[in-house]
Image (cartoon, rainbow, N blue to C red; front, side):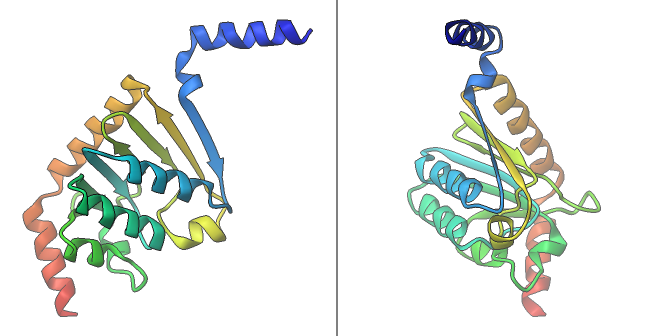
Length: 178
C-alpha cells in the first residue's frame, strides 16, 4: 500500500513538476519572514518586490545587507502605507534602495517578490511585524519554476514602468516636509 502511494506521488511529480518546487507557510509564525530573509540573503543579482506594507525589522535589515553586497533591489509599494508612521519605506529609500510608490492604482496591494529571476514568492503576507506575529496570512514560494517566476517578473516590470521615478521622488520629497 505504501509503495503504491509513493509510486503515485512520484508519477504526479513527473506530470506536474511545478508542485515539487513549491512551499507554503502560514502565520502567525516566523516561517514566511524567515523564508523571505533567507532568499534575500541568498540573492546575488536582483530582488524585485511589490509589497503593500514594509516595517519588518529583519526583512529591512536583510534588504540593506543585500544592497551593500551589490544586489540590484527594486521595491514598489503603496503610497498610503509608505506614509504610515510604522513604515520603514523611507528608511530604505534614504539608504539608496530604488523604491517607487504607487501612483496609478487606488491601492498597490500586491505582495510578491522575485529573487535572482530564479525564485518567486506571493501570498497575503505583508512584510510587517504583525503579519508574522498576529495576523492570519500565507506565503507561497516557487523555486525554479521558470514560467511562474517569469510571469511575476513581467508583472513587476509592468508595474515598475507605470509608476514613474519622477512621481515617486516627488512623493518622497513631499513626505519629507511633513
